Length: 147
Image (cartoon, rainbow, N blue to C red; front, side, top):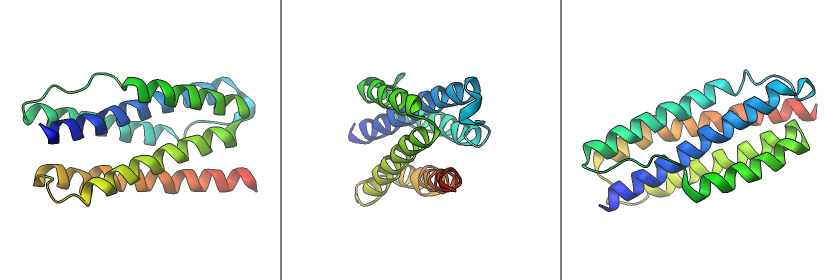
């Protein structure tokens, strides 16, 4: 049961990330001054794929996948909404913070020895590398904002 709870926590985080990226992409596409959201679309798709992988694994382990991001997702949307109002750099900084938090959660989970191989493998081969790539992308976008 502990493993299903862990996976569902990751699933809620990934659902929250999807919701947040949708919110930012909508804001960027409606406000021409903020720029385009094309760089964020692949990150959204990665989070969507992570949701699918986590849902499948939870089901395979006999659990019921979380269907929403819960309280954390609501909070993340409020924070991101405020950041969006402050402009593109604040929005990107908020996304960056969320990605770092997600990567830290995956690293922390890998440090626990009781993770079954299928969960460890998913984190090591898909989830954590994607988070790290997102951080690099956001670093690049933030650097371009400050130039």
